[in-house]
Length: 371
Image (cartoon, rainbow, N blue to C red; front, side):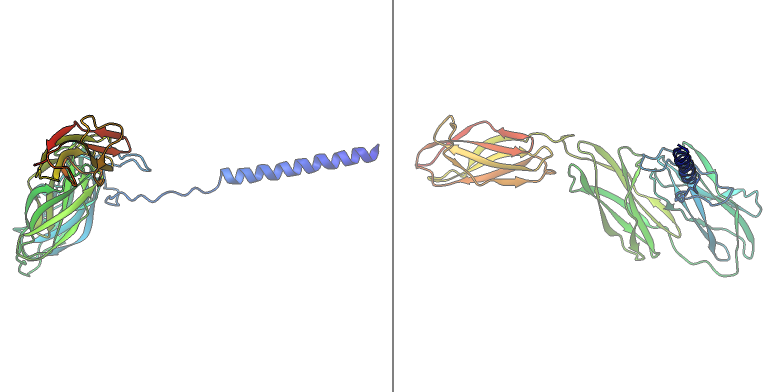
C-alpha cells in the first residue's frame, strides 16, 4: 500500500516537472525576438522626410503623397549646379522641383517637372543656372501630388571658378503604338540625347494620369533623333490606354505628348466568331474559299467544309487543312483552296472554327465551277 502511494507520488512529480518544461518552452516561442522586413520605400532617410507610405505585402499599394530621396553631392561650376534625387509618385500624378537660395530661407525654385503617377522611384535631377561664383547655396527637393506636398531635408553646395559645361535637355517625340494585341503592345518614340548621356522610359495607363512605367533604357549621348521601342504586356483587352515617352539627362527631364491606343476585344474569351464570304478565283476544278474569323481571345483552329450537298449533311464531303490562330489575333480574313472539283458543278461551303469555348459554323455560301 505504501509502495502504491510512493509510485503515485513519483508520477505526480514527473507530470508537474514535464508540464513546467512544456510551459517554459511555449513561453520562449511566444516571447522570442521578432524580425522585421527592411523598408524598401524611397525616402530621405532623415527625420525631415515627410513623404507618404504605401501598404506592404501582396496587397495593392494605396495612393499616397510622394516619397523622395535627395542624393548627396552636386556637379557645380562658377554659375551652374546639377543636383539629383529620386521621387516615387505613389499612384497619383506628381511634379517635383528644387528650391534654392543663399540662406536656408531659400527663395528661388526650378521649373516643376512632371513624372507621372507610377510606383517606381524616378531619378529627378535639377539644373540650376545664374549662380554666383565661389558662393554657398542651400537647396531641398520637393514633390507634390493630390495627396500632399513633401520636402526633403536641406542640403548645400558651393560654386567654384570653373566655367559650366555646355549641354541641353533631350528632345522627344511620342509616336503611335504598333502591334496592338488583346494583352500587349509596342510603344514607340524618337529620342535625341542632344550630346549628353540620356535615359528614356514610357508611362502608360487607363487614363492620362498613367500609372504604369516601363524599364529605364539608355538612349546614349548622340546628337541624332533615334527611334526607340518598348514592348508592354499584361494589358486588359477591350481597353483604351494612354502613354507617353519621357527622357532625362543632367540638363533636365522632358515629357513627350500623350498618345493612346485601344486593345481589341472581347473583354473575356469566348467562342470564335466566323463569317463565310464569297468564293473567288473560280476555275473548272478549283476555287478559293474565303471568310473572316475572330478567335475571341482563345487559341483557335479553323477550316472550310464543302460539298455538292446543299445542306452540308452530317457527313461532309471534303474539308480543307485546318489552320491555327493565336488568342491575341484580331478579326482576320482567311482563305483555303478547294481542289479536284467537278467541271460545271455547284458547290456549297462554309467556314468552321473551334476553340476551348466551343465550335462556330458560318453561313453556307455557294459557287459554280467553270465549264
